[in-house]
Length: 142
Length: 431
Image 1: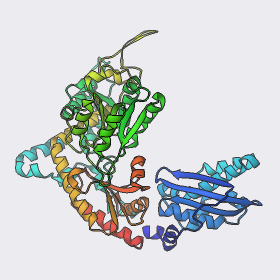
Image 2 (image 1 turned 30 degrees about the vertical axis):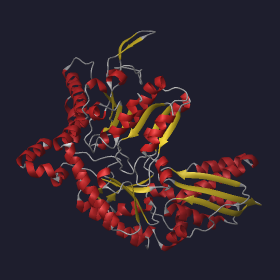
Image 3 (image 1 turned 135 degrees about the horizontal axis):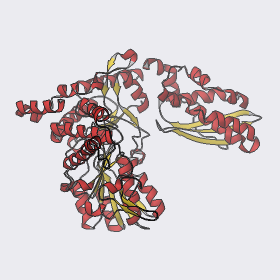
Image 4 (image 1 turned 90 degrees about the vertical axis):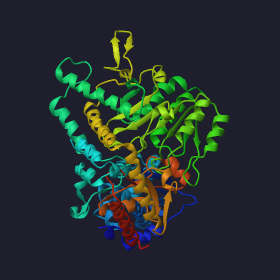
């Protein structure tokens, strides 16, 4: 089963993460960690016309958390915020090809999605309290 | 009882038994070691997470079962037979604990929920009375969060300071930091773990305590990792406070021990107020109970203490010297097996004699949680993460480590399986 988890694509994103780094002038920056693993993710976003214009992440942690973050940034770059809103955990797990994770490791896979949803809460807090609330409801699920 | 049969067998063949544990016999006493785990239950459990909690022998499980089945009652205030029997079992455990760590008196032994609660008790009770503004509490970079956070809470309230003694690159305590702290700071308490739960480093406790006492500074010993694995003698080291947990030494969860020198304990205000810790309660005043009951408010974990009693018997029958020697053998063997593997970094002292049966390591760029997942499929339970020692993780500049930790029932064959699983992890990660 480990061979199924640590497939080439996961190891590739772990060792060569996409969109890793910082943005010079991000609209939102959010940090969170997973106390179980100590995985850490910082997300930096630039939003324009209700689209994710640019996204970078920093982080350290296990292969699953880091590969998942890398793949998530690719997934949402240049996509509308409504798409981020509709992203469910199943989408992430399918995207990274890990639908069989146990309860301990699933948190690793979903940390980046949680951080992304939290970024949206922060982004909307002043602009649109209702959307902020919706995203908060999403973020606390993970 | 199995404990006694083991003890008698030791008498049959004294020469052999003195040098080695009959691990195969010990393993028969632990039902969980027959458990199958891993994919489709195909692997026999290899349990190497003993620094987190140990497994329980039948003697402990049966003792608790026996208490609930035969003499369940609340302790201390009952006149009926069951109450007397329960009180006897509870107080007899206190005597066994006192003997186990060589305390002068059972008055110095307080049952808590765990070592963490014992530390909090002292921080709250002794600390609030004795720590003042600008005083310094000395800790080390190796401490578990349980020996950091209670002092931080206290320091925030009292505006006192915390000074951390450094750890050198070999995993030893920097004794020069200690001398400097005692010279420069208004040190009011030293609180150190006797054995690091990450590095395995065993601290020179006698030296630390003797030096502190020269300046009339009391010393708290977090013995959560040492009492289960080493002979501990509170009179020999002359520590002032000492805390440990039953569940890390074959006993049940929910029972801890706080040892405090009687002359200090007598001056300490209560921690938890309620039933059993009082002599008299009136509308506006209260007279507290004698030691040690003053510090055991509310109904205690009686079944847990009864189970702990059996754990103490079990370890005493083996002898802590033999426990220590067995772990030294395993540690030497495991260090050697790990050193044979490429890209492995081992944290802590290279000399196995300076450490307990705890080995933290990293292998290439495999994150400890990924390694633990792979190990799990081999049926091997190891721990991964920061081990509640984030201050040390920052010092080592790592996010996490993997950790294998041993106890009386572990074998060299299990370490071989562990080493084989590490090779498999390398293959999976294409290293």
